Length: 361
Ligand code: 13P
Ligand code: SF4
Image (cartoon, rainbow, N blue to C red; front, side, top):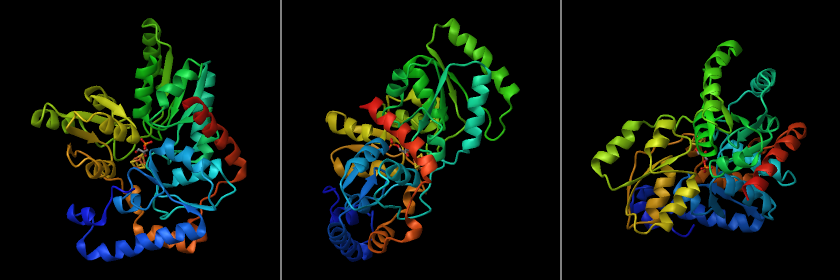
């Protein structure tokens, strides 16, 4: 991305002056190796700016899934987290996909596929007419149990097109709320993590389902008990603080924040939705962006004339990638950083991802 010039990164103290020469060397080497090896380097919006600077494409998780499926390259070094690299392999398994750091995981993605199958059995036992919608922030075994995947940029749109009244939404309980709200379904809060008791859960959700019927809603969203450690930690006080300091600031939150923050915000969006919003609203000069800080850093670099408040937080998983391990991975193609999926689950996961792409576009 051309917006990231080395002198600006130093001036904004995003990289120390003492590292500038090394960064310049790594950029040259990465660009040379990409060409030589016909490699594609996609990067998520949360990646460090010095990584975004040498990436071939920067986007949200939906854009990255589509782009890296369609691109013609010999290999991919995926500058994002594991589920994204896995999704890239799932859609185009003929091409090696590498992840710069094996620590680049995601707190949402750690879902036990057996527990999902158990929940599906439970909903069947209640006689519910449901589909399973899985956020892409999951691994292939869970995707393979799903009717479709979705991302934060398209979850309500996909839900509206599925045709079943009820939705089991895995794993983000907060994005599940946004789906319920926008598709006129009753939001059924998740059970406590790893404490699923069918009887207790049933007693909790039945009155809510009856209330949904009374209100004439389309159906129900059964929220899974997952949450992102970054977005779930954001509080109403983060927004109240901004509103007190600057009532004119537009407050934009990611769909992974808690329901009460989604209600209080001016807009709820995916990361690239936020980038577009800022570009398409030159008149909005002050913005508070509640998501991972990498996105806000990018917006500041792209929009120096605007003021960004930063109640953002860091994702340690996204920040496990750095320019050094991106370079090493591209140079050495280490076998242990190659991401694959057993073929027995890949095909089911690919169907769910392809269905997402069809329904979202
Ligand atoms: P986006 O699809 O909005 O980029 O979100 C991905 C993610 O991991 C958010 O935390
Ligand atoms: Fe996962 Fe949250 Fe990090 Fe996104 S910000 S990669 S959802 S842990």
